[in-house]
Length: 499
Image (cartoon, rainbow, N blue to C red; front, side, top):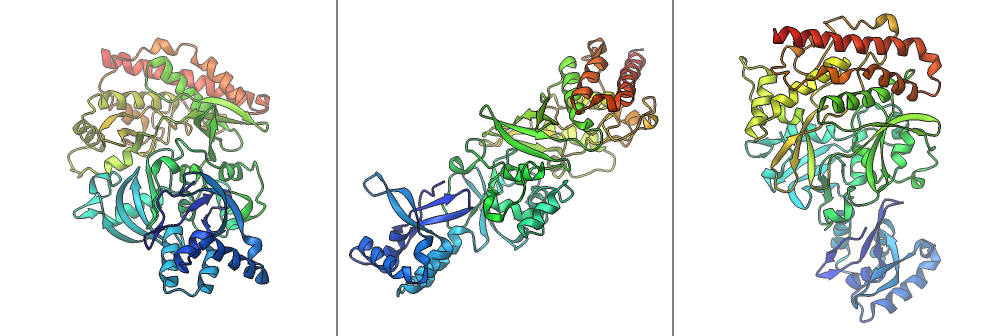
């Protein structure tokens, strides 16, 4: 990854980012040119290089093909920022201290950044040693601030701090603590700036102050990324040293407590998710939700089951593109000034209709019907949302159904499953499913007969999600019977509403 415009004192310094070692490499001859200002920079550098042999710094000099003034690329001596700093201090120059300050800004050592939305400068900020926002600077473009973080005068400090914290991997993610310990890190937020805070859910990122980087050159929608973080979380590789792995990964910004990783498959960005022990049922549940949606005509993300190293996972293609972004319902709710006489359900619908999305009530109805069928207990405000155009900021639609794995008694044994229990926990608008399904205003779109035989498909999904389905045969049969009962209960609700 090359920076387009690296200027110190009016002169260009060529630099390229080394993804493997996560460091910038700088042209040595360009450095001596701006510091010593010799008549012949290349000869001056060669003389300097000979003197460096005495203290073994010359062994750290590498070579990269960098573009020259004639437009062609030539092998050029390069050094990282640490070693360039040592050389700079040995060159007697009035520019040395100013150059070192410029270098720290360029490499992000100063921890000063600009939050960007694609190539739009949004707000200046500084990060502390644990990756949290320590200083919030000038708001540069209020309209492009993350949804729900606009205050009375630019960025709302508390809201933006929370947004940034929520961008990191949850501290409760399985295996994360061991990885952070191995990396010498304390908080998950320390991983964020290792990949410029980039995500595959939106187009926000942080650019070190003073560095000119372009969205097209760094984003993960169009550029490759490392799978090392995901492989460590999945225990597909062992930690063998800090320099042996790359942290340039969208996995640094993935949410949820279950293990997951991004992978490029057939040039598509795909999210691979695991389940919880011992049943691994979340894998089958994601597929079940997508099959129910398919039969009922509910916009959704299609999940499938895949095997990696003998273990079963579910996978789906990213539904966000380089020009669109997911805005969770939680961010939308932060825009709403709560009125005691208006429910969260009605407040959310009214706010989204203000955005010009007129089918939001039907789409929420569809989501609640699905969650009733599959007994989803975790449809919190980050598990549904809206799609927005990242360029024009225009609202496009309600997001398709995603993230439905925590359902169908995924951690329970058979005698704890009671499909007829109308008081099963629900989210986000009501605490129990019997109350939440009452919010559905129109069921004319629902053809329950389309679900005939879905329990047989579910049996197949359950058997595919574990290595040895015979171990859970009794439990799987109970789950399929419970699914059939939930559909029967929904049919009774529909009949009651129609009569």
